[in-house]
Each structure stands twice: as structure tokens, then as C-alpha cells.
Image 1 (tube, helix red, strand yellow):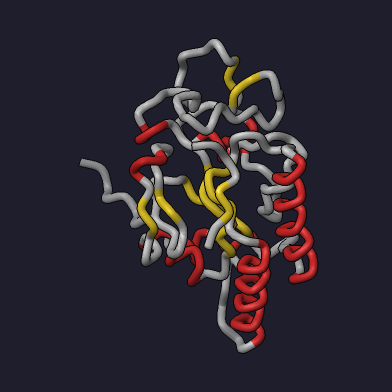
Image 2 (image 1 turned 120 degrees about the vertical axis):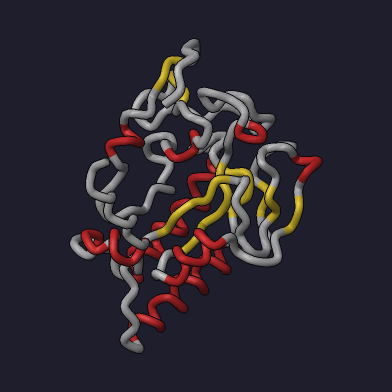
Length: 202
């Protein structure tokens, strides 16, 4: 069960790193289990206060998130290598998360996913906690992230601007508490601000 929080000729290139390989740098500054639990609670609290308007399409219940966090910690305690332990993440709402509707920002098309998409399964396998599904341009057909019945997500750095990009909820409002990477927002997320009148894509 989920909480619907919004309205209706050179040398060959090296193979891409897997999530566990590429996330090795996250070990420094990783939140401990208590900190992660506090952040998950803060996400729900900030959403209830309306601090993150239009970011979430579906926010998973807090109880489920805390169970997931505890389960990942138990795996680590058993000696499993989990490069994304302590990291909470969100998934764009055209990617399946088991037990959560996938809408592509088109409520009439909502379908309950019975399995994780491969990318989501890899995140979980690496220790991440999937918090929920975030807003997007409907059917991923827009340019700056304002074409959604769930509204436009404000920029993380300038609330009078949109976050920009089709997956705009990657750059949530400052203070919304949902970004839980140990190192803070990525440069791409910080740079993803666009004036509300712009037509440029990220």
C-alpha cells in the first residue's frame, strides 16, 4: 500500500560500472541506521507540511521504509557488501517499484507494479531504500518539467524557478528533507534550475 500524496576507430570504451562498483565513494559520510531512520521520518513530515509541493506522486508508507532500512542493515550485519547502505532514493514514476502504482504522471494509466524494474532491483540489492515515486512530465514528453497534472516542482536553490528537466523531482525544494545522499545534492541537481518561463531542457 502506498500513500498518494498528489492530485489526480578509438579504443573501445570501458564497460559502464555497476551500481555497487560506481558507488564505492559513498562510504565516507554514510548515515548510520538511526540517522537514516530520522531522515525517512523527516521526508514524511516535510511532505505532510507541504514543504515539497508536487515532488511525490506516491510516497511509500513510513512503516514500510523503516522495515526496509532495518532489513538492509541486517544484511550488512551478516557481512554482505552493500555499497548503497544508508542511501535513500526516489524513482521516476515511469519506472516500476513493486507494490506501487506506475502512472507516468497520467493517473488513468496507473498500474500496480508486481515486481521491481531491473534498475530498482539493483538499487535494493546494493542496499538502498526506495522511498517512493516522483513527479515527471506526463509520459516523459515535456522539456522543463511543468507538463504534469501533479504540478511543477520548485528548484532546490530558487523556489521561484522550476527544477527543470523531465525528471524534475530529482532537484527538490531546499529543506524538503527528501534528498538523503550522504554527500548531499549532486552538481547536476544543483544546476538543474530554470526560470519558469524558460523552454530549455536540462
